[in-house]
Amino acid sequence: MTRTDTAAADAPLIECRSVWKVFGDRSRDAIAAIKSKGLGKREVLSEFGCVVGVHDASFTVDKGEIFCIMGLSGSGKSTLIRLLNRLIDPSLGEVLVKGRMINDMPAPELRELRAHTIGMVFQNVALIPTRTVLENAAFGLEVQGIAPAERRRIATDALTRVGLADWLHRYPRELSGGMQQRVGLARAIAADPEIILMDEPFSALDPLIRRQLQDEFRQLTKQLGKSAVFITHDLDEAIRIGDRIAIMKDGAMVQTGTAEEIVMNPADQYVADFVAGISRIHLVKAGSVMMPIGDFNVAAVGALPTTGLDADIDALIHMVLASPQQAVAVVEGGNVRGIVTARTLLEGLKGDHAPPAKVA
Image (cartoon, rainbow, N blue to C red; front, side, top):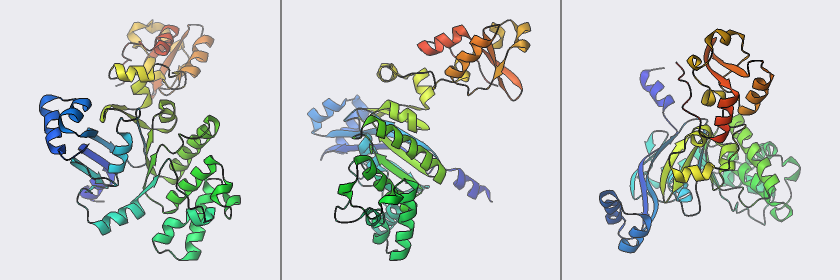
């Protein structure tokens, strides 16, 4: 593999570079005023009659990653996801998919991108009521011109993966809401896209069904080696599903990081309020709550029980309580990187833990 090929292989699947979406006839003037005067969303609406959907968003989505975008209603998250397959055009900035800018992509190539590279599942899955579950799942393949027998085979496999093998010849009216969402997911994965865009697909479901589908979606996405952008207004859902999370407010990305990074180090009060009620017991890991070795009795370190950087607080509590020294050594590559004590655990749970020991 050449250096160029390697660089291409390592490149993100999706990249947004300073992307804006402002709705209204004076969008360019509004963006210029935001940049020069720092106008807020309400001021832009008042002065220019424009609505800020997305405000200077830059981020990447890597191969195999589930990237969650969350925020309250009106934060711009659903607008942003529609820019990723150009259901709407950006006012400014660049959107790249697999290294290619899609802003000015010709219509035939854009249709090809949507058919084969990017699949999308909406909150309203929009199943065709006169078609069976199998026919609904195969609809995208039918549009692509796939032969009937082949599209039935592919759609059957996709429905089996989402647990609907016994419902192939039923109609949407016979399905629960959760089952209809499974059909929508099957329809998306039947086309074998590299990227799946999910716009609040589970938000209308009962909590128990919702959690079940969250787990199934994450497991299936990882199993198939897909990448996904998942929109939600629920931080618990984002934490359950996402490898990384971006929190939006008024069209802007306020903070991006892993769930642990965001919970342990919120960027501002807005994010801090969001994460205030989140349980840390399975989220925060040893690497975030350990203290430097120098702050502990060094002579006693060798006698401590050991654990890895990824041990969560729940596991650490049991280990610390069982340790005569009330402490655990955190080890990586055979070397002790830090110490977890009852005090650091309490600080980690409370959320005001000092910066963790540096890992060399």
